[in-house]
Structures are given as C-alpha cells and as structure tokens.
Length: 237
Image 1 (cartoon, helix red, strand yellow):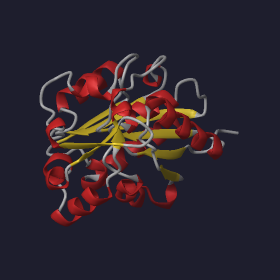
Image 2 (cartoon, rainbow, N blue to C red):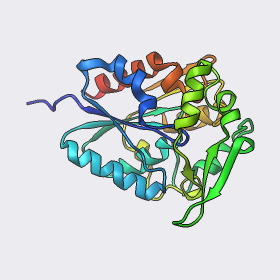
Image 3 (cartoon, rainbow, N blue to C red):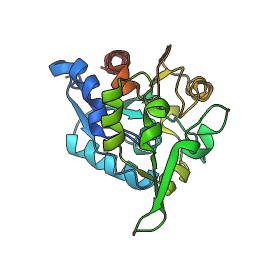
C-alpha cells in the first residue's frame, strides 16, 4: 500500500505565534491533515527536539513547513528523520552547517530588523528580544491591515538571543530532502537577496517570489503560502 498523505507540520518563527498560520490552515482545509506547532523559541537544538517530538507523535509521514527562524528549526529537526518527506521554507532561513539566523540575515544588505528590537534579561539567563510595538507593522507585516498588525504586535512571541545566534549542527536536511521556497520581495527581516541565495543553494523543486510580500506572508498572503505547501505535499505523495 502507498504511504498515507503526509501531515503538514507548521512551525512559526520569532515575533509570531502559532495562530499566524490560521489563514494558511483555512486554505488547506479539511483535505489536508495539518497542525501548527507552538515553537518554544529558546534554542535551535531545543526547539528542533520539540518539533521532533511532535513528528514522532504524529506517527506517519510529514511535510515540515517553517517560517522565518522556524526554517532553522525544521532544517535541524528533519535531519536523519525518515518520516519527513519534504521541507517548505516560507520567508525562512535555510541554513547550511555552521550558519545562524543572525549571520544569514546579514549576508546581504537590507535587513532593518536590528534597529526595531527591544531586549530584556530573563531569569533563565541571557536576553529575550522582541520587535517594538510602534515599529512592528512597518517592519514585520507592512502588507497587513492596521488592526491585524496591532494584534500581532501584542501577541508576538519573543525569542532568545541564543536562538538567533545558534548555528546549525550536522548536515542540513535540505541537502537530502526535496524543498520548496516561497518568500516576499519586500521582506525587511530577511532580505530577498538572502532568500534567493538560500533557494539557489538548496536547488528546490519549487520557488515562488511574491511581489510586495512582507516577512509575514503567512498572515498577509496565505493563499500563495498554501499553494506552495500543497505543491510540496502533492510532489511527495
């Protein structure tokens, strides 16, 4: 018997949360089994281990989808896991060994994220960072409405500085798994030139660049994101 259709596992990145996938989930509908994971945003290794736990709990084939820093996590989580059939990068980091979100975002000029961040210490050690609420709309989701952006700013999940600085260990999963990329050319967190570089390096089966798309295309452009995910599922089913 052929494998069942893969379950879609959606992993959000920094300064967002699992509900940022709601529009994508609505468009995937009942035809696709899917789950949006609450990414801890503590460290690449720890977050990847948590995603691996989710995958094991599903107990069948999966397609891992990462947004932003979530791309770091799925790249590590999928390594050596035979249940992962494909990777989808949505405005996401697709690191190679030894690369971090911090180093990749600065590989080409254009990111304005650093100037919008606020930081504060946490009791477990180190600092957390978040985007200042008055700068969130322009920085993160410029193509969303004022009301949506204000809500996202208030519900954003901070990330530790460690998570942003952690480097990928081991071979990247995109080197052995089919991948798809979708990103906006107006991403102010990760410049479009960085996205193009990562996609070209990974030699994806599908690549979509959305004119005017911000970093938060999961919210502002859920149709294009869902179409890319569906292409990936069909490509490996």
